[in-house]
Image (tube, rainbow, N blue to C red):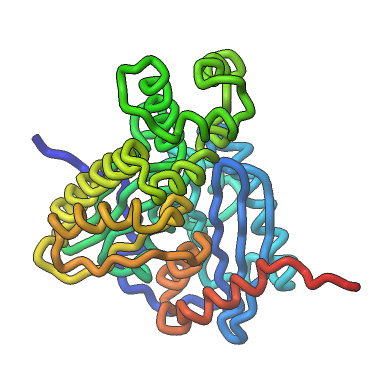
Length: 346
């Protein structure tokens, strides 16, 4: 059976480009809760930020998504004191299942020089420096995307109803299931039960089950428990450890598919771990590394903490033909400084 990649890099990201006019790059990270735009002055290294609400078209529709993207972009550009003509390149990495709909809507007001990609492409660029390699994302949800000699390939990323294995929401749901099995004596005892009752402020784990259906609890509320489940696993609770092992195994299986389809097997390449779940530490990263190396012994696995918008700027530099003018380390430092809270005035 012939299978096409679920996420394909646009042509402008796969070819060598001549240096475009302009001394500024625009990158945007658009998500389900917020949108961050960053303008980089290539000459000075200064970064200017813009913020807006959600830009995931699945949640708010393509028209509203583009409005949020442009609002964030315009704020960042005002801060830099520039207009569209000063941009050498612009890449918008946007969450959602149909970024083509966002791109079509964007074309009504902006030129094709503004490139729209799925946010997993921006994560890959952060994880690998926009080179051959794999990004493994485990935040509220999960996703795996890589690029290699055979092209690009994505596995996972089907959302909380159909996938997101190893993501914080998945970990939260599995913790609740394990606690319910403990309660009804169909599963082993676990410290997750008491921790869930305390965390959600309910009288019993069965009342938590009712709350899941009757309120219902939001994705972010359930995902927030992953911090506690990680601590419980780290303390040695066998049930919690098994949940993290299972999530790591599923993500490792997806990485193996990406490695094979992207033609990375037998090559040395980076695997970047991105997302809040990896803050759980060895309880999650150790089994994941084991599963990844079973499929790709040559992989160089590291945790990546750079802001996601970093990837969009790196991709914008590729579109503009000025990748050699943007140093990742300095860009990360500039973004961190620009996004830091203002100093307190005593």
